[in-house]
Image (tube, rainbow, N blue to C red):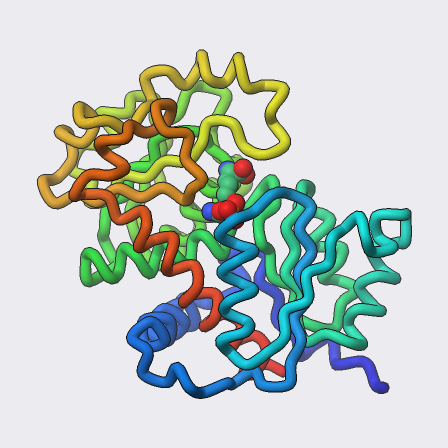
Length: 311
Ligand code: CP
Ligand code: NVA
């Protein structure tokens, strides 16, 4: 079998891998798919998509497996401990071999460099299902949810209150790509990645602000967003981080600073009572479970774009 042309394939490792017009088209397609208009069509019939998860997952894994099935393709979950990668086979040999069988790969891992390395040896699209640095599939769903609830993206004001982690980094890139304004409130030393901020600011027609005071960030916000204070792989820092993030909880008092029609987002899983209170999570302003559902629709549109439109 001839290896598929490396130049032709498109990866999705960060939001920078898609042009704004492509993100716009993808979101439109996701909304169309959500409406069920062509649910009986199987655009990925006969294709097989591999999934390697080195970290726990509920939403990403299940939404990808279900989405792949709904598109008519076959999802193959590869437990990293049950493939030879877990016994020391190289990334390059694994990527080159799997490229001969599969039509795309979804990978959740720790170091973002592993994804870049895998993608560089792979002749099929590689999709980032979360790394320590980025969570771009989450950002697509975040954008779709904002578009559904606010009717637009451009000029929407988001306040991200919490840890400057992978979710925050991809949200910054999503905001920069689609011209939303984003203010991050976090304790000193827990800012998003400096390279992510610099690139976003250099390219953006929107504001990317980093400050300390959660209520200042929430002021005039259309969207309030948070994530866990302790991400996967950071468990050793848990005690220290929880102390530092006291005061960064999304609660009624924070919501009262925002616009009256503010919506609340959280990528989930949540640590209820830590970064967000039960009443906010389950309250009328929460769009959190719509946001979780939208993972399915945006990832289906993404797969269609990467696997079919760019074979
Ligand atoms: N938001 C998200 O990626 O959730 P999972 O860790 O459950 O996949
Ligand atoms: N920041 C979190 C997101 C989980 C979806 C983590 O990396 O654990």
